[in-house]
Image (cartoon, rainbow, N blue to C red; front, side, top):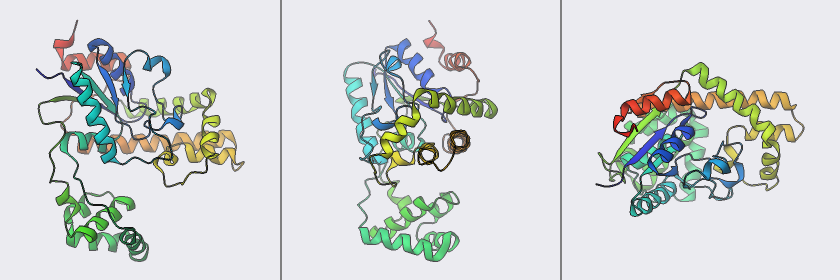
Length: 309
């Protein structure tokens, strides 16, 4: 039998890292990161990456291994994660894939098409069209060639609307059609999954407490170091939730209390978006809705009684 692969998804501060570590210790498994921002070495505190003490308790992969100047795509992560899983299986060990980036899990379990690159002039034209037409008219135009994408992409998601049009304009094939042309790296039946969905009030309280703790742990120094590199604001690491708010404080534009409150507010919004995405796209995944780490572990064992010592 092939070693098991466990998938643990959840919004920020939901307890997924604690559950992954406990499972890894119980199964002598290795942990693979599926969080787009925990990839980057520059923001350990702000992205709530596992601490050195936690990393020492089980092998961890793809945590803090990427420089902030090197923006990774979903496809690049998928290739790296697939290779890590292959190596873990080769050692005869189980793997725990954990994170809050839903697209990473979707790519792993449903596949990701190798779409041809988009020429710069097409990207620029698409951006200009969006600015000139506005979202409603741009979406209507997209619907003529890719109705599935036009219906699926959430209101206000300019980036994905423009991307869908770029692909259609470049290849003549709808992005939705490209996405059906691939086999998933993890075939059905090769993995077990859970999604953490604690009570919203408890989740928000954890988000607020985590941000406050980050200030005491040195997040301002971390943000200052990254800001000093003067990297492009379009890079994924520069869009980490909380970075903009704390950077504004460091520039003297707001007090620390105001920056913290703004970062907490944005983190709560981010957690809500993650939870909403997972409820829609991971509707078939078993839910762990307990508030405490111990309660989540008990719910997990109830789903997999064979793991109970």
